[in-house]
Image 1 (cartoon, helix red, strand yellow):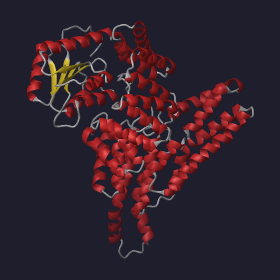
Image 2 (cartoon, one colour):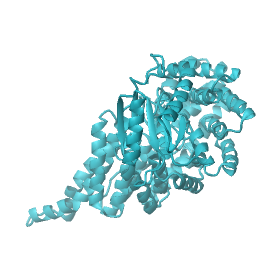
Image 3 (cartoon, helix red, strand yellow):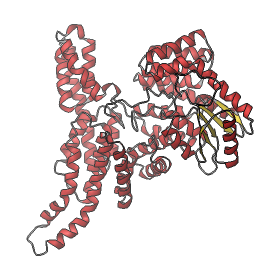
Image 4 (tube, helix red, strand yellow):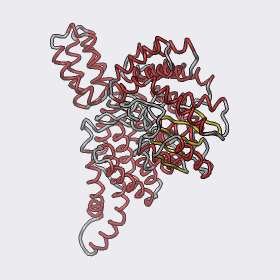
Length: 586
């Protein structure tokens, strides 16, 4: 819906989607909308069809049944997933149609910013009343929504704060949007005060969750954890809170506890594509391949082709199938990955995923190639070693495509984990990578920036104990480098410390080392004669490597995190490298 025209009761130009499994009920709603003047209406009998329509087109009005008998997904889960993925603009009126409205369902609706509930059966007059009420709110908040559409986010936040302070109409709705804007703009003090102001009036779960999200964004997971645990004591079916608790526990390196939190989240919303993927990815890195395969394949069944589907799911499934010697399934995942990459030719991330699976596919073909080579060279004087080298060549050539990029700025943590998994698996098929340990050392020196992230790297490489040992040593080495480089700052020469750290950070592209150089520079700026010159050198690398976001995160970092409000302009991924398991670069 464009905010360039005044919203009135005239629905002639409105577009609508009706999603209901029952043909008769769907027909009634279609007739009622037409009676209200709506001329452009699409319909869907399945939640999956509704998802496809909503991802492809923006609608002014959506009427969605709560229950789809032939599918596990509910209308509420569909709405939550779409909100989480940034697929619904604030202008869209989303009305849930249901035979019952329990307190828990109404609470869920409030948390997901649903516009209204309609109890079956209902009249055209009741439907018109619900649409009219929702449109009145849209009109009241039109200036805020328009500013967001125009990507004037600071102005939108200012308008939200004005409405909150004046306790104007729909102030709680405006407060939630304003808090999301301020959080994404990094105005942490302001957003914390906003949440506290709301909580002084009403104990809204979204505001309590918001306080924890502020702590997470400020890099203080130890402060977020008790807030989330207290929230879940009171709201034990709050899936977004479990998501954020899992994220918090990951940042603290408490991976088993994080897996349990994801388990709770997926049990509450078993048809959420995003949650199945995050849960499955963590299970993969913790070594529970059976659970990982089940969860990730569930996401494929629900969402392959959806905009919320993450290509890393296919990569991990391909790796897992290679590990248990199921080549047909690996090749299918490779084909699906190639199709995703072809649909998104600008994505370096997807291209690297394809390259990862191509290495494993080449390795599978190696056995057949070796047999052919032996038949072809009968009677020749080639040694077994020469035949082995000949048949390994395609695999090593495919691997070289990946390894040559490991010191490129856009080679991210996710790509490192995928490469480590491949390097650890190739020896199980008698493929010898001559410089494998050197490659692992370089990956460790670049990405082992905390104990939590080191453990994720080791989880990816768990098939080879020596690689895990090297990665642990790399983390220790990085800590020693930091300690040695920082000593001049303690002895009155912070400029030397900054230059040493920056030089070492550039050599390995280690985000933590470069971020440490930046922090020392900021702290002692007045004591460093060439501070401006160093600032100009370091700042571009901080942006490129995403040093301020050096945290373990599962899935595409550019996807909006749980608990947030969908803000269309802000939900567009930035044109910078993605760091999908960690090391974000926004």
